Image (tube, rainbow, N blue to C red; front, side):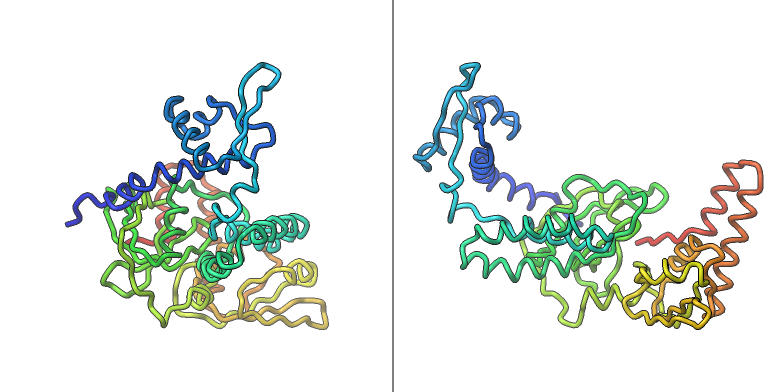
Length: 361
């Protein structure tokens, strides 16, 4: 039985909330060219005017450089020179990692210009960090970048509850237990779990890679089913034999299955397009004399392979394994039969149960 599972996270927020708000106000005042009025400060921080007045007075005592001037409407606007925060406020490692992760995502989508701009922003943040802080942050940044991974795909994405991803990032980075409220399949009531989080796999729904406290078996947890996440004030020892990169490479997508030797042949008219795809990190490609492209890789996740290969239509032929070819044929036959019939909600539910792959815990 877990008593009041969100209490540790709430205690941390209560303990550090005023200091965090004060630092946030300092950043806001240093990031504006024209300054902020007291009402604008209160709105940004979602606090009352009396509270923000006290915060301003505290900042004025801490930073004599805090200045104010009146605008055209005779409203007093406050501003803090950016130089006042040098050595006091450091860009968090998570911010640098998030920008560099976004740059890698842009690269993966072929958006080289945007990737270059994001890397410039990350470099600028690194440049304003003190050398000692940068050295400490480098390890955190590298760990977070590896933990988050890149497996972004175009298309619709589910909604993830506010605050879940930032909390998971902190838990992964700090090797802290995290308490989650996790909804079961089919509308089942949410259950409370204490997890040891290792990383996030982006792709389709998005998944947290974690194991339950005391059970070393790694499992996948759908991000859209995590209703809330709170840090626990104690850490866990990471498994030294676990690599997120190796774990992700076992599968075509995210579902973990025994790997298959897959051989695909893309027709000459689709070969150029297929050559720009990385179907799996282990892939090897071969161009045939007729212009076709043969792709070979070792991976599990038959269901996800079928979902993706279906989008290539007749341009792709599954050479091996036979089970993969037959599974795709069965899915295509079932989908064709379903869509050739008049609309029937009950039949749609039955087909969903046959064709979908629900990962449950």
